[in-house]
Amino acid sequence: MYTFRKAVLFIAMLSIAVSCKKGSDPVVAPPVTTPPPVTPSKFNINASLVTPNPTFEANALYQFLRNNYGKKILSGVMTLNSFDETNWLKTNTGKEPAIIGLDFMHSGQGYTWYNDKQPIIDAKAYWERNGIPVMLWHWRDPSNVTDEFYTKSSGKPNGTAFDITKINSPESAEYVAMLRDIDFVSGLLKELQDQKVPVIWRPLHEAAGGWFWWGAKGAAPCKKLYQVMYDRMVNHHGLKNLIWVWTREPNDGAWYPGDEYVDIVGRDMYKNGDHNSQISEFNALNTLYGTKKMVALSETGSFPDVDNLIKDAAGWSWFMPWYGGYTRDAQHNSLDLWKKMFAHQYVITLDEMPSLKN
Image: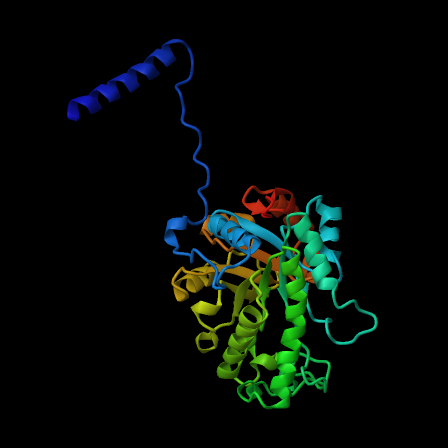
């Protein structure tokens, strides 16, 4: 072995000498490129969805996310009206994000000015272009006493006092109202399933913050509601096209529905003008969930600069700034930063998405 190594070294030195004698520069190894932020071997991401027998498309989407975790980040943006922010980004950067954020906030309220099916129409349209729909639900007062999802205790004078603890009382009017709303949204999601559209589903977000009614009474009833929703949607309505996301808040361990109900953990962070990678949060979440769950910046004000993501090895699955000023105003995210992100090979944009259809 020692003699062989000496021979290899001699040949290498001779090659360089011959090259120099010819008047050429020695062969120089190409510069080392920046490695992926994190190596997949650091994680033990669940191989399958928590939903038994998911649709082909839901599984394909999950495996796509899983395969890219720690290698690339998916770009996203939240919308208020159909494609408002994706169109703005297309006009101003020439590209669109891989993920579109949609909300059931107005659906099922009887608004004459709104089409209840608009969120699923938009989800289907973006999926047809290989985009990914992420859907959440600013769930308005199920009792319809108010039109709010915020509580009075959050500082909203007209906030709702809806009592989520009634989730433990199936005979109560509140329980019936909650199930009615869940059934309504399930019907919309079922239409997407019938059209072979998967959904990254993010219900009961930011619960431990306490500003929404579903978090106003502490961990136990919220956790119960999440589990009831999962059971109702998956087992009663047969929804197999959902990828379930739990939106983490600080110190919300008691609120976590359980590994068997959650595919991905999201984190909503609003830090004005802060484009750091949020590496401490990324590492903390991966440790907390045993590296079994992918973690994502499910909402942001200012999103991380791609250079910081790579430098710090912060392998968030995706980032999604909120609509309006959070997307368009330079104080949150400059147009130059958007262009930089969309042009970078580490950031996946809509034009780079593969078809995940059967």
